[in-house]
Length: 476
Image (cartoon, rainbow, N blue to C red; front, side):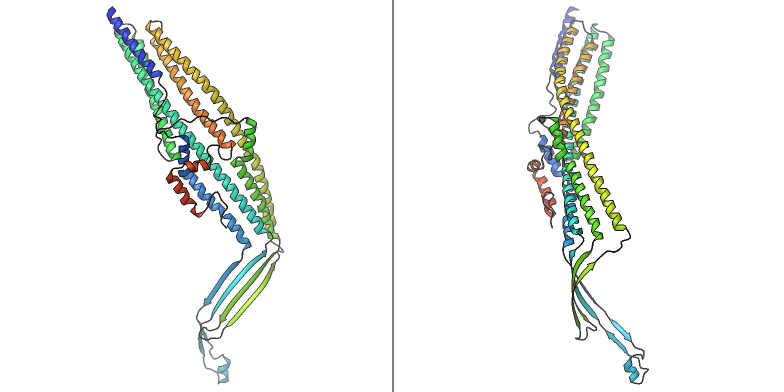
């Protein structure tokens, strides 16, 4: 009996050694060799995300507002030509038939034709083209800021997808290792029950905890599958080996971050440009109340019958003055409407500034809190590792039960999961802060990502931008 007890004790020690190695393993879900970095993932999202590419196409369409507005200053030239067949029956009415004795019918077929070219040059249009051009330029700038905001949103989504995959891989690895440890714990409890050292209750507790760990693994697998699907949707390819990014340094103070965000955040700038466009739209509407002056020149050549050489040539040059006298109140109504819309757009700037301020403050405090919690979580993991080792040693001498060991292992697993979640939340909060605090998202700038983009990505961007440049001056 003594030799059996010694053999069982040796087995228990081997189990504890195995469990200690498993629980002390470093949390590495995949090898870091040739691992994809966060910047590489962001470059892929920047070059290939369909939402971003669609927004770029929208920007190129918006750029055309400026050439359309410039058309109000330029002349228009039209050409018109017509010809056909004309048949006339006099039925004895013509004077020549009357002179000849009357009653004769005369029929004649002619081919008349005319060619006319007209040029119209606006001279003064009530300042409408001027304000239309200013409004178009402001709308283009607002659209560019909206494009930048969409870029930042996509890059933030890519960062979130990147970190979600890393977090869920770590959680799955922890829970899979926990299954292995609990399986060994159940095996050891069963062996000790066979020699009479523990009761059936200890074995049942180990079985229940193992069954729970299997369900937790299934939950972690489902969460990882969802994160991988989101990674593919945002970034454009399946995640391979991912390298954990480092947290960036915080700006000097929160007040400076808020002030910068309220001044240069793309959403704020977009709202400001929209307000500027709305203000110019008032001038466009008011132009309908002012007179307009234009110059019209035309040249025409007409012939009553193209079968003959006779024809008339006409040349004309006119100045046209148009003065609106009564517009049934529609123009005044349009002016009042434009003023109210401009007032609405100015108020919306304040609203956007407040939303951006709230987002920056929330992200700042979340990041500060996450960094503090990460330190605490690491300390908690270290303490739980030490506590688990002590509980296992006490379990060997009989002062602790199987449930005590299981509880200690569960607490260690929970603390490691908390540490993983907090590191994830810290990176997300830091990315949120960078996106809203700077106009180009700090290190997530369009220029850097263009340089980091894969060859296929830049080729697609070049192909899309051949018909218009999203970052330059619109074509005229």
